[in-house]
Every structure is written in C-alpha cells, then in structure tokens.
Length: 430
Image 1 (cartoon, rainbow, N blue to C red):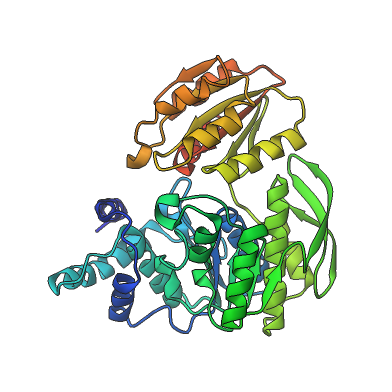
Image 2: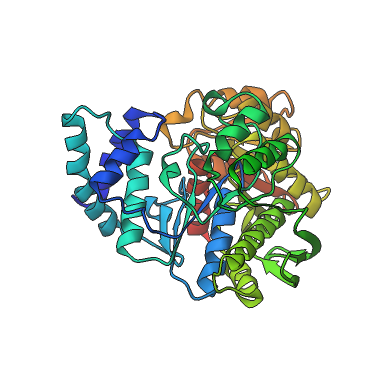
C-alpha cells in the first residue's frame, strides 16, 4: 500500500474506539518478537506538557551525541510527526511499509479470536518496530491516554516522568484528582526513578506509589528550583539550580511560565539519566533546550497583527494560556479563534478564554469527534457579545484577521487538529 492507503487503513481502525487494556498490544508485540524489549526508554505521562517535555529531553539527549527516537501524539499536520529520530520525521513510505508488515498480524489475531487492536495500539506497535529497526540509543515515549491503561505501558522504562495532573478525560480516567493520578501513575515501575512536576493531592498520591514500589522520586520545584529571566517573542531565559549543578541563563524558544516548568522537568530527567550512567553534561542540557522545536504551543506565527497559536485543549491548558497571555501581553485586546472536540471540557475552557476576549470566532475541528461544535458559540456568548460561527477553519482565520486591530492579539486555540490546520493556512500566507 502507499502512504495515503496506510492512512486510510489507520483511520478505519478508529471504529474500534477507546478499548483499554494491555492484552491486545502485548499479543501483537509478541507476534513481532517484542521489538520494545531491550530498548532504553523514558516514559512520559501527565495531563499537559508531555509533548513539550518529550521534545526538550529528546533534544538534550541528541546534543549528548545519542540517536533518539520520540513517539508523540496527536500530530499538528502530518501523521509522520508522531515518529521522529533526532528531530527527523519518519517518511510516508516507511509508514506504509510498516503498516503492510503489521496488517497480516492484525488479521491473524482476529481470525484466532482476539479483539482487533485499536488505532493507537497499532501506532504504538509501529513505533516500537520502527525505533528497534533504526537502532536508536534512547526512545522517549509519550503516553497516549492515562497511563496504567495506555498501550505504551508495556515497557520497562529507565525513567518515568509525570509532568502534572489535572482534570481531563474524566470519562476514562476518573472524577477526582486522586483517581486520575492513580491511573497516570500506572507508568511508575518498581525501582525505576520518577520525575514529576505535580503538586498537591496528585503529588501525595505519586509519593505514596513511589514508596510502595521502591522508586526514587524527584520533584521539580523541590529538588530543582528556577529563576525566570528575560523574554521576547523568540523565547525566554531562566536559571535553574539542579541537584548536580547550577545552570545559568538557559534559553528555550517557547513562551509561557508552564514551559519553564516543562524545561525544569526535562533537566531533572536529564540529571537522573546522568545518575544512571548516561553520558550527558551541562553543555548538552543548554544546547538541547536552545534547539527544542515544538510548534503549536504559544507559537507566534505572525507579528502584524500578532497571531499566537496554542493547543490548549483542556481546562488546565486554557488556564495556563490565559495566564501567559496576561503575563506577556498585559492590557492587549484579543480576538479568539477556538474549536474543540466534543469530549473536551468546552464549558470550562470557553469560560476561561472567551471572558478575556473582545470577539470570538468559533470553528469546527476537522475530526469525527468534533460533535456538536456549534454549542461552543452559545457558551462564548455568555461572556462576549461579538461571536462568529464559521465551520471552515480557513474562513475562521481570515475572519479573525479582518476583525483584529493593529495592536490586538489573535489567539487561535483548542483542538490540535484545528490548530494545526490554522497554522498551515497562516504559514502559507506568509
């Protein structure tokens, strides 16, 4: 099959939905001779910041001279973004070839009475097979959903990272912070060290589980402390006191206080890897952070008017986005473009962001899970009178550009599927 046929095949697997449990992925991997076994893997879970932390830590390891595979999801533009080695995406031809290889195993499983693996389980198997074949030194794996019940949780990691925990995916993970944390903390393995930036009740749960499993725990903000520095639209500087050394005037090409926390978490993880004998140093940390690229997160894509895109797809992400906008651009009026999937916290996210906007443009994410996307406009009208409803993302972007004054900010946020489409449109116009 070619690349488009492979994508169509994967899209068809979405009919199997969210079907949790590790039995299917374990059976599939066994038929592939367990390509995940023996790999040096860092497992990253949490509510927000997983992708950013993955990108930062991958870049640090690369600057240490290693060949690093990174598996992340979802993607902004192309499915190939999910599989990277030293920042380079897998080719479409390689995706098609691997799907061709996996397909007979999937069909054999069904013929033998097993449930068909889900789309994400097939993508996970593809990642392990690809990175094994490419002989990466390290693999950084982002959890898809939750932790204990996620298909990536078949691994025995060198290190587990839980960025933070907040209310998200309650239908699947639980309805309290304690319940959600216990699911996310399922990636903690006996004896393997853990790094987290979680606090409050979530941290208490993680501490308890680490004690029970004999896993050393390192907490960003307690074991590592940071001081913010200067910033401009290209990024921000900060200093960090780690356990091993003091890192002065580090720089990340990402905006937002939450990205400073993610950077500190990545550095904490790098220091734990140093403890485990991985050859890294402060210079690799510094260069890796500078070279980090993670589009679609507080990303400035146009300057006049100032257009910022950010995949704030849940309440905690929306809260971080609003705080960053107020901190970096105080007093600036905002036109908001937003589109969210039906299973997200539309009411709370809209309340957080629409209440800070002069005008709101509601659009539809290009995803089957968009549901009744128009409901978001009704929520927005509770906070702002000027609300527009445009199904096509391109029309929504053009409407926002027409609405915004020269000193106003356009903020495009919500589903990464919508944000990725808007980003592509804006970059094509530059």
